[in-house]
Image 1 (cartoon, helix red, strand yellow):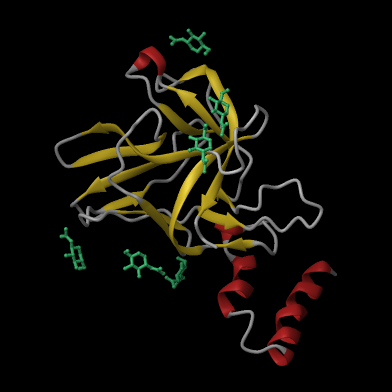
Image 2 (cartoon, protein in one colour):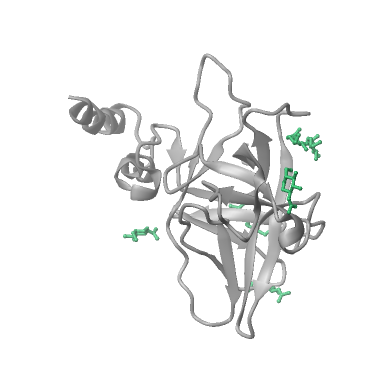
Length: 209
Ligand SMILES: *[C@@H]1O[C@H](CO)[C@@H](O)[C@H](O)[C@H]1NC(C)=O
Ligand SMILES: *[C@@H]1O[C@H](CO)[C@@H](O)[C@H](O)[C@H]1NC(C)=O
Ligand SMILES: *[C@@H]1O[C@H](CO)[C@@H](O)[C@H](O)[C@H]1NC(C)=O
Ligand SMILES: *[C@@H]1O[C@H](CO)[C@@H](O)[C@H](O)[C@H]1NC(C)=O
Ligand SMILES: *[C@@H]1O[C@H](CO)[C@@H](O)[C@H](O)[C@H]1NC(C)=O
Ligand SMILES: *[C@@H]1O[C@H](CO)[C@@H](O)[C@H](O)[C@H]1NC(C)=O
């Protein structure tokens, strides 16, 4: 019944309120990277920034802590990047992000070539900066704050693997250098970050509206 109602809705709107909503809004229901995220989901947005907002700990404001593309290692051919707090990695080679059809793309003023990687449980969501051919993973989605009863901050949230609720900020601690990075479903036995330091956050999409 619900599926039938949803299928009917765009058709009705299409007749009476054309040209809105556009076709991409209708198809969002069919895209695996936005699956189950409801009517507020979107997978195309340009030139926004990201911020981490505490889910359980106190926040000093509704925006949250600015996130940037942080260093995480390099080979001769490529550099691996993660999402770090600007406070722990005070450089910003990629001042904004865009989301294109489920890929999350850091924008470089110097036209550096970078793609997002697949994210598994326990991973730091990461990016590969390389001049070799590389394919961006279609795994990201945005979700507008549509709760009329409030409770949200008003900013849209980022989802990976159609999940907005499993991001944490974790310290790399003594393992490498003191950087606070985003981790998806932290793993107790990771050598990449200090599990005990992790706390849950939402990733907010800033600057769209
Ligand atoms: C995003 O920013 C770039 C660089 O400033 C600009 O060329 C482009 O038009 C912007 N895109 C949108 C949709 O605002
Ligand atoms: C979230 O909590 C951490 C740890 O207490 C704190 O350092 C950070 O500033 C908080 N974030 C905001 C936006 O207040
Ligand atoms: C919100 O608070 C965080 C943590 O104190 C700070 O880094 C950030 O700049 C603040 N954002 C705004 C818009 O005031
Ligand atoms: C978005 O991704 C889907 C699945 O890979 C693809 O079929 C579609 O052509 C893409 N659309 C655009 C506008 O890139
Ligand atoms: C980046 O690419 C744009 C568009 O192709 C070009 O206008 C700009 O000059 C390039 N910037 C650099 C630093 O190469
Ligand atoms: C890991 O984090 C916990 C909690 O913040 C801290 O007590 C501990 O010293 C850290 N361990 C390392 C190796 O940095």
